[in-house]
Length: 484
Image (tube, one colour):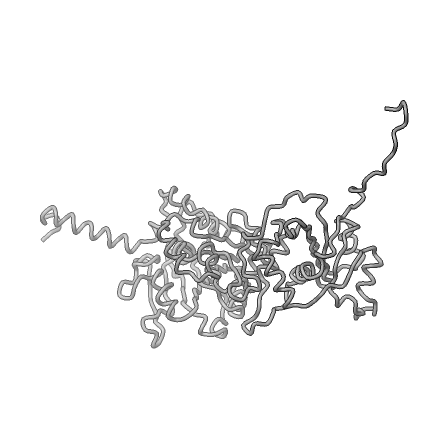
């Protein structure tokens, strides 16, 4: 029986089923449709990520859970490069030939259950994922992989030839990522440094694309730091941070329209307290290892004009690789210290640092790392003597580490330590300041954190008004008769 001979309701049902079948096998066409400009406008962070591909070979989409990292970001772009079917609105990188890609995730199981499922569809229904069903060629499965795909060919529409996609996992080890050059590699979830480096090597000859999509649950790792300009998350403009070699787009729950308020509340209630920012905003934190696990909103304030009569003091930490100083003004009435300025410079002689310090107030006293009272390895001179010879008023600080950490912690939690928003180096170090898995303080990128300990432990008590002459009382002069 021909379909036209069937009853109207049956014909309508069959046509609807066929339409649904075709829709399921061309899912990518409906994600950001050609005629759906409004839908694309609702996802500006995703569009920004795609566009950056025209200028950067290395990009990351570091985002909250459930904002579309895998399906709507990494997966979508990957399929465009495999098929060569770019939408007219596409502003990112374009390949004019079949491409060879790796996609990798944390384990064989997560790659199969998440990445493979989103790209290929579920087992038994391959072709219902992002890769159009009529463009899928030969599929090879992993031996004893429980339906895990090893490689798949994808038709490159403009040339009629085949692109190649291989599925890999981090638990295979670094060795499995060695081999031939690739046109692109997509790492879904943060990869170990060794594997990421191996992937970068595979792309050097081809100038291929490295795409990374993950929620920063591991905190400010070396991989994250590569994108964050050494932790200066505040540099993000409209969620984008760019440097010479790479770019990152950050996105949170509030940056996508498909998450309702009730869903956000439920997910927030299930989040571990120290991972709330990572899961909801895509902002990396150090989590349980942070020295001072206080939300920045509790103590970071906009820069403001400080009263001139508030006493000032600074703390100095010296070294050739980095010399740092931080200044505080003290409100004696409330016993609140305001960190309002910083100095952060490496590879310079003491005379250079001293000039920068004096420029912020010659009469401001300071405290210095007590190790500066020892002779330097370079010429046997005591660093504190060198700085004093440049006109700085300095006293050795109390370097009781744990006591100092406790003092700072108490001020942060009671609202008695405030930090100006402009102190980006201070904030960078604060975000990285942590203990390792054995509870040992990690002595790296901590110069301003040391200064803060010195300041709170020793400096606040010697703070003085920076320009006392401004507050001198003029001596009494009797009036001269006849002179007004």
